[in-house]
Image (cartoon, rainbow, N blue to C red):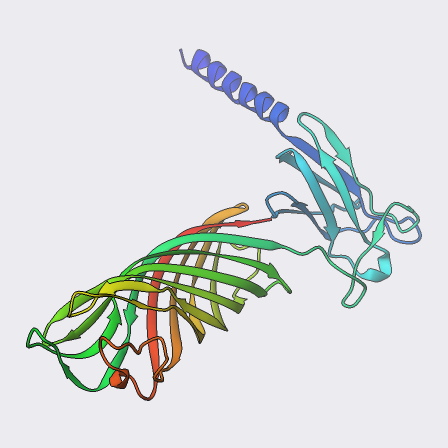
Length: 322
């Protein structure tokens, strides 16, 4: 019985190895110096281009290396050897059940010289993220109280806290520094507040910012924290409401200068991951008699000085690197 069990287990292991060998591929090769002598103890890295996943091995005493059970695809194979040995960057393709050879030899014309700083353009990595979240919006405070016809005292005008959504698209300038464009949209309700709260009408708020992000840690790590800052504009949509005498009135939309600061974490699994972040957006508002916050309904004195309307957004979504 014991012998039968051992035999079955051995057959299962052998069968699993055969199946794995047929669904993966291998890369093997050697590293030699300018005299053709093998170079031992050097780390060789094969990076799967599509998923940006690295695999590493070390050359043996004969200068040879071997990668086994690699997912099919295109790989960039590099070495950590001294540049004086003439190492290069080799691009090879791995197919299922096959072994690809990639030799590092200074005399081989197909070996690409390793790029150093300033040697020329490198391939850029892009990142796109979509997200949904909740935005806490702060409006502006009146310089003095306004007594409405219903007997309530109003001294604030605010967008209501509500659901928001948006996306970012960025390009990595370096391994850590990323230049991004951010768009965010909040569909809110404009309210007046004081002794009571009253809705004026539906209000759409949009943010358009150019931001610079710093991503901590190596780009191959599955978890990366980031921080960002930037500037742009915040737009307020127009809305129509009914005045105290029953007549229809309209407040026109406007575009205001704004900035943004925030940070969060990205969690990757290959090229796809999750992005969680918090963002603070102060918006510069300077209202005058013909300004956005001014209307005959409430009186142009509502906001007669500089203010910053503030937004705090907490969001999460999907991010893709390519």
